[in-house]
Length: 216
Image 1 (cartoon, rainbow, N blue to C red):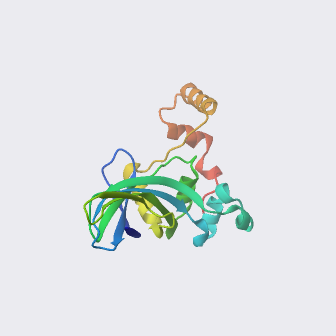
Image 2: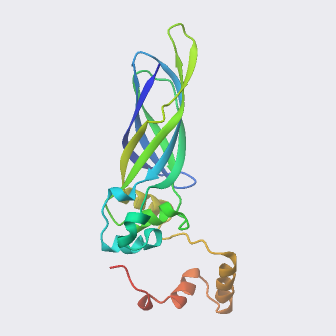
Image 3: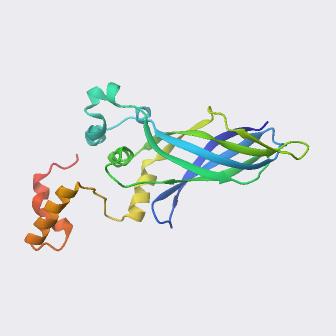
């Protein structure tokens, strides 16, 4: 019976896609190597482990929205579900490299986006939990099916610079802001009544730079 081992090799930005994508590279190894694998339907749950890194003072301030003040982090900071991803791995024997593409949202209503944006440097600690189905041949040529054991997982430290480069590539010098409909309606009427051509000008008037505390 196949015994798949999965390890992280690295991550790349997918430069041309309809939405921001990261491509995680996985080393997939089968034991025993002589047993051919016909296909693998791989599923992955990716979790953020915020307790596995340190945070400087500005990052602690920006993480207040997620975890409160640092003195409460022992109770409030815990593992966060980032996303689910899946890929199909074609036939191989021994080992192969698979690509797991992971969509990345820039919606600031999502906890993962808030967490990533709060970090200025360093790495984002991740845990990848694998599951799925293995299709393989036995000695008489019969096709068999088995499940990937639930204990298959890998850790990875995603560079913050990679995530920031991804968002700068897809949304250069911009960010997304989602508002409740009635709040947007009030802003829209304000924009029209004051003859302001851009949303930036609306916020420049309502939130002048000299009145907003800047990040240290």
